[in-house]
Length: 570
Image 1 (tube, rainbow, N blue to C red):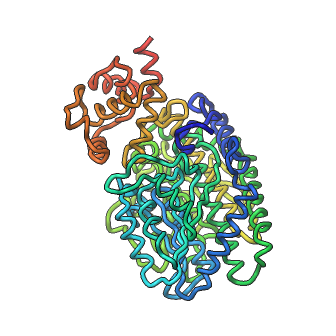
Image 2 (image 1 turned 135 degrees about the vertical axis):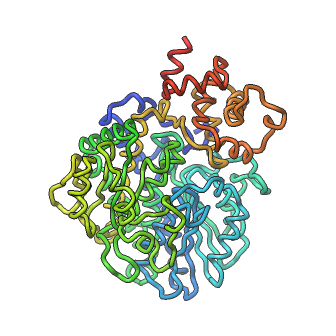
Image 3 (image 1 turned 90 degrees about the vertical axis):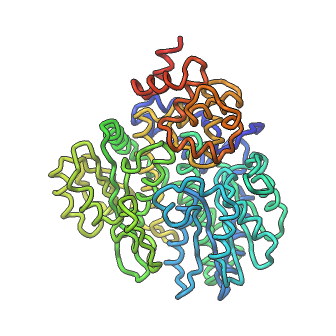
């Protein structure tokens, strides 16, 4: 417990050699690390601890007050995966508890609606933008229950919102993450007056705020909080607000809340175990994904979005939305091209954000997310190097199957209705609806499977060194600091050498000018945007055996950093 690094940014010992594993070995490691969501990590507070359950019960009671208020508003906010899951949660609970003209549940994501599909560089680094967004979404509300989600306790976007709400008597704020306050980021936030740790300490001390930060252990791929932390976020949001809804409707007594929450956590744990009972099938999917990416093919998710706001059936679960989220995470996580992994949804934007009028498809191909867009834009050019992952049933699926097969593209069929799969890889999940959670347990299973696919596929094509991502895109403050830590740890160099190597790679120079050496993080991020393999080059530069030109040449010959080092450094 003495580590000075955020738990979410610490390498997980269980996955130290994930880059050396077979597809089945990769899946087995993911199973072990996902088990920590429930078993906990070292001696830190766990998800199922009595103190965590009592905290959740207290928060559910306070959230119920907001739900019952005629002008109450619940706001879920986050950046990146946290923001996408905020959208997912707000969408689900507005459908479960509709309020005409003024939805109770709202979401915020740094970078706004485009960030649901495509990472917006630097969006999470502005506390002032976070405040402006919060003011807009809470206008007219008389009772606010706010949940700021930042897995490592680090996002400036969330810090600004928390500090803005703390003085307000009509607001209750929750800081949700999976790190301790002591390990929250303590470096100064640009254009702000506090570090995130300062903000977290304010939340901890405030009478109208609370921390919700059980520790679930490091990610299987270091810092990839879309995985375990994303799953735990989904679990916490869902159990908190299912309990709050029951309390608000008078369907449960206050004294029953803790036991109710404990039972839901047990159900989620069983769903995870049920998923990994299919490890052999998931491994086949991972292997197929690795072959696809090595051949410069594409992974396409097709799925539906449950019910829309009008109550119209567009699929029995939100599987298609989970596919969109998984696809959106690959470019910032692995430096993948946007088109490497894409998600398409039955009904497009109207199904994703029903009743909002949001439709970004005129912005271009990246934002054309309907299955019809896949049929028009992707189906004609499918090849044998591509995979189409079918996420359950949806209207028009049966017509698409022979058209995809005619292109010789691989089909992976993930089903839960008991029928036989029709793909090269078939995975049958447990689709039994939970009496309280509905399809939420199935959604978690789907998330675990598709996270395993894209994680394992990128591991198999050399995107990681040990369990560290080494070909990521540096798009915000968090990723800059993460990258400096990765270089220092992997290459056993000082933080100063790690930072200098990263700057040389970003600015593409063997000798930094004084201006470059003292550049702000935002300037470094801007420079790095225009450099391919900026982190692998920095790793090689940190050894002192390469200059910018020779590092670039070596990686063109062999993109796997560990192999380059073995060849050139004895």
